[in-house]
Image 1: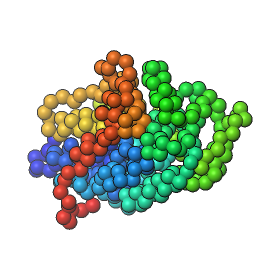
Image 2 (image 1 turned 135 degrees about the horizontal axis):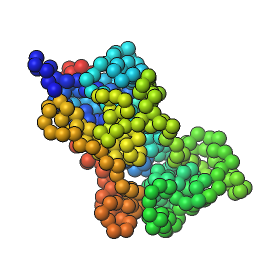
Image 3 (image 1 turned 90 degrees about the vertical axis):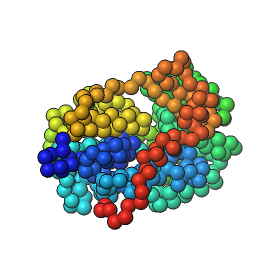
Image 4 (image 1 turned 60 degrees about the vertical axis):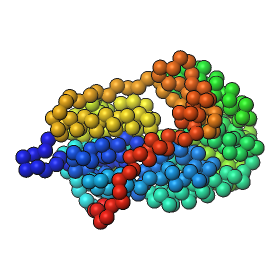
Length: 373
């Protein structure tokens, strides 16, 4: 709570992704919030594949952090050592917040996620990849999960004449807790689009040329089938951002590297240290779940600060996914729906606008005038 002298409690949020930026925004009025992220802008990764095929989307998916907070501050910095009480940043600055939120997320191969910390550099890289893709006739996507399927749909919607092949070691597409009917519907739509599936046999090795660049690609499966393309994209491989954890926080990770949290998203063994989003074991790695956790955690920290109400536990979500195949295609599985969600509903809910307005709504603060950070 606020002390007798009127000082506001301090909250440090490490990571400004889908969960972190919501915590920072929703506590800006009751706490001294510091948001730390190495990038200058939030990236709406949900629409990054759309921006690859339609670069006019780029200015809509990079949102400057300086437009997020009204009272709090944004530090373009990176945590290098966090032990639960102190946060050491790459700049040498040190934070000792009353509440610490770990929301540093994960890395994923480009272009589903970008690693460039400057928005303008990231935009230039995506435009370069767009030009390489536009000049290719044959495209190879390695990975038949949500990213690979969605990228195939985006490419075929923007460039119907290109030959797109998806390959995966798994015998079917879209691994996870989903109904088989969803896989069958997506496969039927991919077949109608002319996307070729090569499943059930691993590659002997990955292409030797860099992904997302124009260059002859030639690989072979272990069964001896040869696959060729003019460009390829890697659509698998998540890396958690937790290398800055020290001491008891590092020990709180499970065998897979996720931070173990309780029902209130508090890190095991900690009092006021929380973890949300991809690095926590609270739920599956999805942007929507990270956002839900951020909203709930902000409400619970507010309860601690104000003393008004009781904290609410987080409940893992049921099977939930929407896989657009271009602006008008795709399918999904949603709680409360009988059976799978078809292309029209998928397009209406996600595929046409890619949830851009939902993300941009938080970045409505006035331009700062001399505010630190």
